[in-house]
Length: 437
Image (cartoon, rainbow, N blue to C red; front, side, top):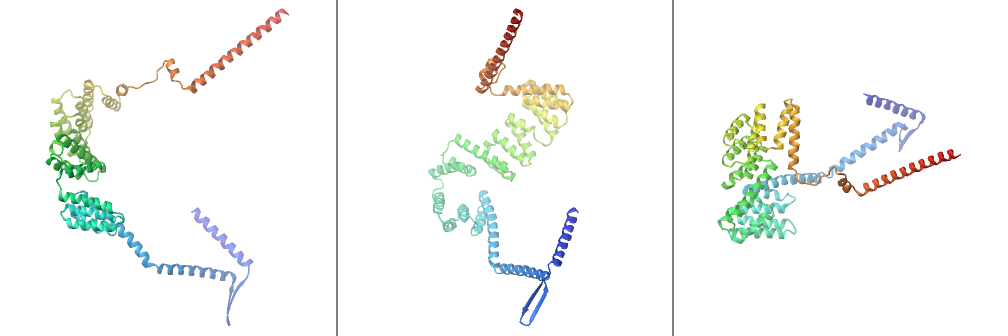
């Protein structure tokens, strides 16, 4: 409202000023063409002149735009086609990674002409055609890749050599060994896991090395898919493709369970951990089982059955305490935590007890368990030098500049003591002089 009033006031002021100028500065315009003449006041003619200028300027801008409609449309169309080509390229690369060769080839070839990276499109499409067994089409796409980008001889040559080796010597020992090293060097874990059966069939790798490489490949793939979190079905597909002997690996089970939790598949994670603990009892799986957000009542019943077989397992007792909390059984949770603490003192269990007692209003017990938790945590820290209250040790650790300040302070105190002694001597001398006088 204030702005509106201000604008109105300014408009009135400018109008009054303009009116005053019109009255104080008289004049007229006279335009004569032949026998015809036009006369008007100076200010009205000025308004007409400015209006004519604006109209002419606007007309010229419109004409300039009309003279370049085709070029503007071409630029807009080129940008649109490039964006669409990038989307098709991404879809094609995703399909290639997922093994959908036909769809990958179609998307990549269709987007190649409008793509800003046609070399990538044609090389990837050639690879997809090769995996379909369409070797002639793969060679054609490699030729297009060579023509699409200047200086692409090396990239096209390497791809062509790789495809030729794969066609003529797919199971040649040297080729398989080179592929294994290539996959490891570029961290192509999916390619490496697919290569393992061929290496094993040719007896080019020991059982120990194969187990290590397969475990590493599946670990990296599960971690990558879980981190991206885009499609939990990919993680489940990896687990389904995993060799049976790796499904009993505790690290892979824990990683797969964590990926399921991130993918909002906690019921599946609960079944996985429950069945795995029957075959492979491990504290990591037990502790993770107690942190799942599923049917807490059923989990508590299951864990209490485990307790009958392992009554003194501290990790199981900690898990039972947490499950009791999730069921709002405060007294039972306290009993399980205390039983776990008796079996193996732990800072984590003390912290759980401290939090429980604090929320129950028992603050003295809560503070006691918090202190115990800190003490247990302190014992788990690495042994490192620490300052002590010994003055000699502190003096040895005192920095040089601090020592200099201390020396200055001590010398100042000494000077002050000497001055005080001199003053006392002067006073005593004056008293003696008075007595003798």
